[in-house]
Length: 322
Image 1 (tube, rainbow, N blue to C red):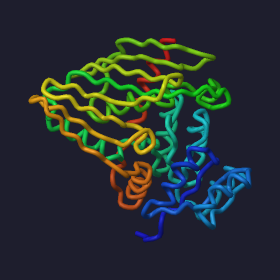
Image 2 (image 1 turned 45 degrees about the vertical axis):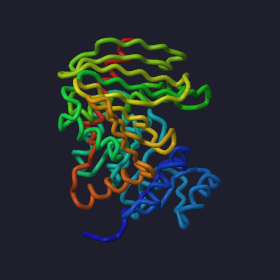
Image 3 (image 1 turned 90 degrees about the vertical axis):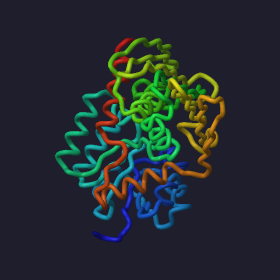
Image 4 (image 1 turned 90 degrees about the horizontal axis):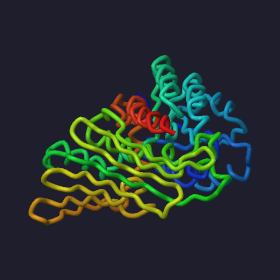
């Protein structure tokens, strides 16, 4: 096993990549941000400011052909995720692709088949499962700290009126559910270890072919779920796990250190509340480090393509009601 860092390349100079993931790759132990594929010299220079020596490839194909690149991060528009993830695997690169990994279950299945065929690691960049806030929540639920879990409700909203933004473009796989519904839905599955049995309600408000508001409910084996998302409402994010004996609240469950500080509040039967804070934890750095350990040491990656497929199946059910 080599001690050399995993050399990462990024397909496209997306703003999110520049503000978060590129910095995380640069900061992570055992990782090196080595190359960027973009036709823009100006955008390459923005990344190179914190990653000196960053190789500049003019095309995605050129980066995938670079023999010095071990893993590829893909922050492209949603409708391009599976296409370029499969191309990266076929080029013998491990792949971390932004959420949602695909636009429907059939697309995710294509990527799973490519992963199995190549034997490489491919995963969705679902960063929250790497954060100790969510790992602690999962452990508390599993050990029965809430009593019997009865209900989960989640909210994630922000306001985006920019028509040029891909979140507002149906042709590029936009919409609130694909952008942030993956968090409200997938986090409930991951934290509880349960899969939904049925969709109980779905109220969507559509605009130009995308959902701008969605209020949905699911029945799980042991609890009910209700969550809503919007890309036209004021910023809000929180998740509540309501048990027979205690209430667990995550105050900043998705954008730690951006929306607010990540905190976990456990309100106990005697009325007292335990507060745990997770200041300064960078879930993107942890994600990159765990990805590297999965490659080098064979450790199980916390969020598999099958995990992502389960959330996609929920999205497919919801969007089929439109």
